[in-house]
Image (cartoon, rainbow, N blue to C red; front, side, top):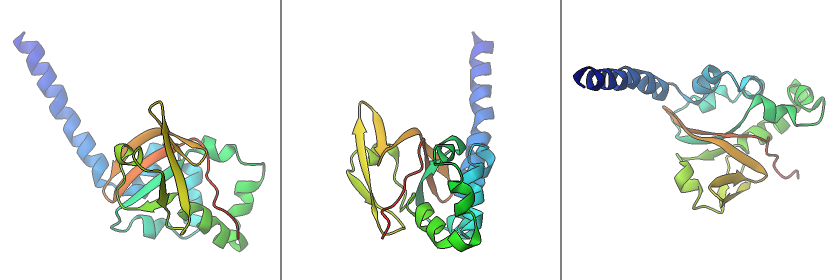
Length: 161
């Protein structure tokens, strides 16, 4: 019994530095380390938004995975990454970011949130699932040193002017 208790305590203690190290990384570093946001990170670089999302924040990022970007029509990502489309790319990416640290529990109580783009996203909760516009939050509350990331399964697009 003592050895089982010791093993449990040891495993808990060993896990603490890992989670502490994860929270020491900013949003961009956390996305890079996750490995499933290579398109998002490339887009942030092309839009010159890396420094902004490495700032003090706090920020809440609704982060589309690489698979979410693959749902866009063929050629869309390649087109957006071109220098001449930088403003459009920035508008899309800032539409995925909310000022402040909004946890999933807080998001479930909201009906909308104003993004850094200036437009609002609709937020709804049904049967324990949180939706941001038409995107489902598939993983929530990934904490970073300057905010929180919620992983979404679809790229959300702002209204065009």
